[in-house]
Image (cartoon, rainbow, N blue to C red; front, top):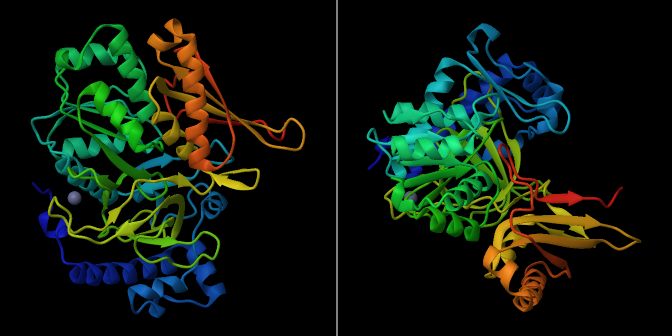
Length: 433
Ligand code: ZN
């Protein structure tokens, strides 16, 4: 089943032709309508007519979050404010948030692209989508909402939190699809278990999750706890929100909607493009965005892309799940470490729950890593000897993964803060305190 077969199964040659035409248009519009681009491109002496092939995109400078903040709030809009009908922003935890403005056409495309993804996951007009993403300035809630309505499903806009109410509605409405961030999903699973509700009491057939980094081990735990396949949704506020790329039934990478977003992978140090199948920073150019075109936006997300005919029949370029963020990367004793590597090691060992925190300290001159992870209830309360064994196994597994010694402490179940909203705090860096 396809939502838009023509675009989703286009030959690479036709796709590139379409991308080039759209790229030329968007660069021209940005240059003519957005003072920021006009100034940048004039300074660098690169002009719309210099884009003759897709490869010419490398002539254009990057756009970063810092550029967006400098243009706060509406400086990057390419249309008069009256044509912008909705605004979202990033969380703004570090300084001013970044603003994203949408015209009516932009919202329509947003719905279309989520609808493509939902169709890949086997969702249709018969489904009841319980959307636990927050409705507000965060893009997650509304993006899913527009896509769900576009395919004609029944959307339950419950938003984040109120876990007991979530569970009540899941049962009463017999919701077939749940949308959540992995950490909130695990929280729901825990509540279900404590209430004695099993997957058989529910009617779930599919889970869509995103907006947090996760590992394959985390997905397996989610699928096991809900007895339901879980698919990855990727997006970012600046570029659109969820739906930039979504996972198909093969569960082996996400199809990136490359007719709307032109992807590049760059080496974040040399800033040069990398070939397919090499891991680097994802850079995206919006090809159809009307309200706020973004050209060569550095996402900071680390992944790789590849063209291949997918088992699902689609030809849209595939992107691996995000393995980290260039700014989440921790430098510990001079070694680059992604929190996701530690998570992967933790979840490879039986006897612990997927709730953990990484605490970095520098008691004298050397960095120290402590990883707190919750032991499974059956082990924690019954078997002290086994706990010691698990601690050693975990320290070993993490050492194998990152090449550094860590001190693991197994803590009592349910003692690490749960998230009722937003993203879990996995790393606490006290090194500069
Ligand atoms: Zn596929």
